[in-house]
Length: 72
Length: 72
DNA sequence: ATATAAAGAGCCGTATGATGCACTATACAG
DNA sequence: CTGTATAGTGCATCATACGGCTCTTTATAT
Image (cartoon, helix red, strand yellow):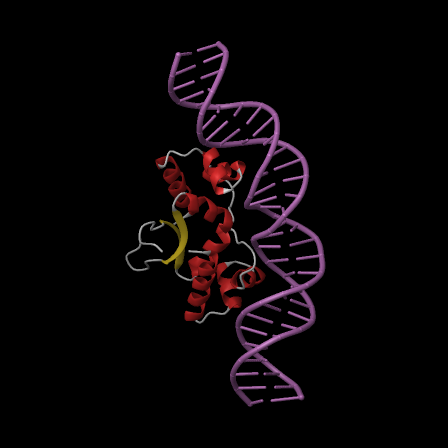
């Protein structure tokens, strides 16, 4: 997943759960400023930050093999 | 995946491909020092760093739903 | 028009990630 | 033992992520 896709996934998931940035920031332990920056495509979050956000959204960061054959 | 699992995955993948840290650092564009720190479990890499490493190993960073039911 | 809620962005101090260099540790070959 | 390859670490510098505070923007409601 490219960076923009990751952001989109997080954002859509948050909105699907009807959680505001403010609430998500609180329950994830990530600063509101940091979350706002991330969702607006700015910056380069650390793995820890991404994990904290993903976690409370019921998601997790993972590594998977790229499908080299029928990928694109 | 927890942090240690991510590291383990990267490390095993690199060794499976018989690539040294030095080579991986060169082809991924990540500093050797940074890669060493990451694989030895130190620090908290940025998403960009993780993506660069995963990419040249034929892997990608992704977000997936946690299996809440039969997970643990 | 005013009020409220949510998101985005500027300013800015602090913490720390990224990196190079030099050194150490380990394993293995000779 | 020496030499080589690979991995890990201490130190120092620079860039930047984190986060609080404040202001703006946009949408919606009264």
